[in-house]
Length: 303
Image (cartoon, rainbow, N blue to C red; front, side):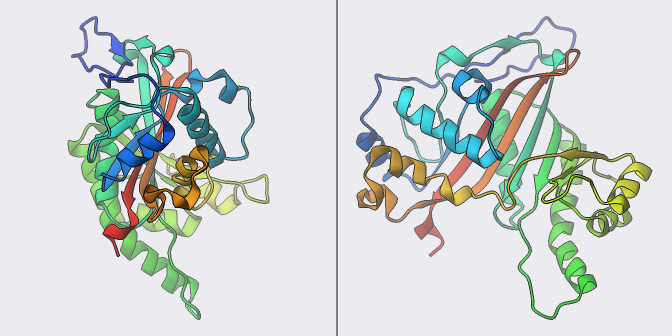
């Protein structure tokens, strides 16, 4: 799956294909053995919307959707012939390919960070651009990692500690808008106080604040007012917080039935970042493509 970027005005087509070569489906255990040679790699689901089995199901959250997608793909589609260091394994076959004019579509992505490492965003953006063969992303939304709680800390102290972590990341996002082909940025699950802290300290404001309505059916009034006054869209999502990224690799072990006995499952790989992207047809407001990219590294690299 990929996009080919042409200059505006040219009759350029967007080719959602990938040059990855597939061979006859490998044995699952052989695939696991190949992964033991790697320190890090990425998984790309390709277009989730291309699978009728997934489109007809209602998932409680996006993590359940991703897990079901990987389960389906790893048991029913050809496994990539090559598993190279720091490569991206496309798990979608050629039955899920479509073509579009780049000017007719809008690409949005959401990055789920596992730590306060700015490099996670850089890697996620670069990977998506490479996979979709595009230089531009219209909307980049970032889900910051959870802040560790400190007993006895006041709300104001917690807010300032949170902003100290967020500030360099948001500065980096602002730079993306100026230099890296990102049209606008968004944030996820920010409270009114957190969003106000961003607005008070940066000229570039977020276009979107993703909100999850856990246990209620209405966005807090204070957040609604702040968003309205600053032209920020409040969009509801069903992503778990935090995203259970480290459960993803368990799918590999469970499908093969090898469990922890497989060398690649001990030590397990862990997720450093995860991104979800959507491709929209502008004039029709139709989501024509949706996929996930996950980066995994061996846990013993940080030990």
